[in-house]
Image (tube, rainbow, N blue to C red; front, side, top):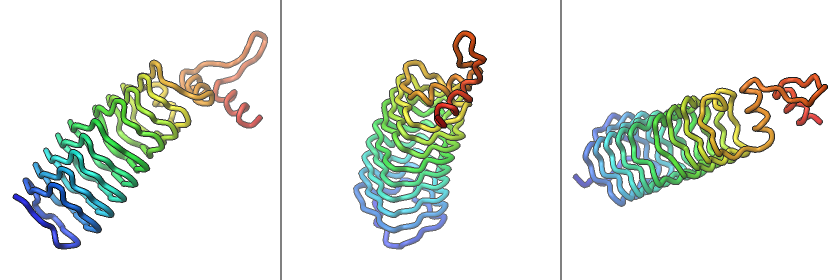
Length: 221
């Protein structure tokens, strides 16, 4: 069912199976709305806010979103391949069994997002805010994560094989729980990795000290 939106705000509306293909949406607010099985292909949003909305089975491929927000939304088996998000907030949203490649994410806030089990291999995630994100079993193989903030992220069995982590911020739990074979890191991160694994840095005859202390001394020196 094709639909043209004329209001500035929609609350608890049922947009399931609607067709918004190719439409441009600007400055609209959606709260608690259901977009199950909706066709949002090639949709363009700017300064649009979705709060607590549901996108089960929705088709968002090739859509483009600028300065929009998807706050505490649920994406289940949604098609997001070819979509782009620039300057967007996806805070607290959950992505389950979604098609997510290729995907463009630039200057986005993904704080508290759940991407458990998601396949984002090869996606550019540099500079993104992923604080306290659920990345359990996610596949970030070969991703560019330079300068990303992964502080507090859940990272059990997170695949970071071949990823570029230089300048990224993360906790000890990630250094221990993630799969890091072939990942590229900087010197300070190497010290943090050693500290997370209880290693000591020091030569023969040196009383050494923990890797964390060594890293701190290096930064202060």
